[in-house]
Length: 382
Ligand SMILES: Cc1cc2nc3c(=O)[nH]c(=O)nc-3n(C[C@H](O)[C@H](O)[C@H](O)COP(=O)(O)OP(=O)(O)OC[C@H]3O[C@@H](n4cnc5c(N)ncnc54)[C@H](O)[C@@H]3O)c2cc1C
Image (cartoon, rainbow, N blue to C red; front, top):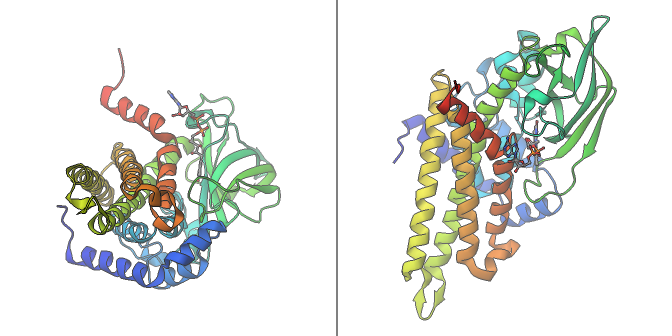
């Protein structure tokens, strides 16, 4: 079993109790049906310090680490995958502001994000380049001391709901594909920014999702985030770090699906025996528990590594892949164990399955992420 220190155990317990008290099954079904963000719960969670626990204290964050943020995401998603995901994703990209923002940029946004007044989002990927960020076509041109942005970012989480976005654009068209990119901070009310809602998806429907279309968006020079021309490695670092938090969500989703399956097989009788007594059920439950623990080990391990300031060296990516695969497989198996009832909304596990699947596809997707791992493991081919 994975060990946690006393304060980490307390955080996990407090987050679990908050979720137990505040997340209501019927409300979750209604919110998800309406594609609505759980505003009131988000506000309460922020007031109690569950939002942005990993953001610096001087900017209203909790001053703790990625591990603590993962524990909260795990506890929330275990109770409800959709509400947990919505709350965890509210700070999406803020890690990049912490890492690359200057003092003014941090002061302008981080306190509002940590206090539950503003959501954040990042738009790196585009439909044309897919998972290959070196192919980003959005252009940021320097003109009269301003940056002028043109292009489209596809399927951005919190798109239309966030107050600020981190945007990756090409600042040097002459540079080799991966080199001439830079990151920018774009306010949601910026003139020239249009939001195209992505509408209902398979899962993650409590989180807004939209394409961001930039038409001659003028940004002050001060909106450059980090170093000009370093946008690609900066974006990759942000993806790796946020990957750990996504792993935390997936771990909770997997554990929540297992909880529900366990409760069901202990109660449900077929052929005068509880389902839990059948050998085949026991094999399935053991396999599910195994996947949950694998996800937990990888997630906590990657988070600890990040918190220790060691290079993640693709560990964040590995944690995300492991936890996403676990969440999809465990939720799928849970539906199977529930039988026909598992296909119904009332069972909850069908929603856990739908919410789990997205982590397997987005922000590069598993195949592209595995290519990155292969790059690290194999190295240069002579
Ligand atoms: C719900 C949702 C939320 C999102 N949120 C965000 C966000 O907040 N910020 C953001 O920047 N982006 C976001 N995205 C965009 C997302 O990250 C991209 O969709 C993703 O990177 C994959 O790109 P693509 O959809 O163009 O698929 P493609 O890259 O076109 O992939 C299509 C298929 O080809 C495979 N493939 C790709 N490359 C290779 C290869 N080299 N070899 C073999 N097979 C390959 C893929 O695995 C996949 O099966 C989101 C997407 C979704 C669906």
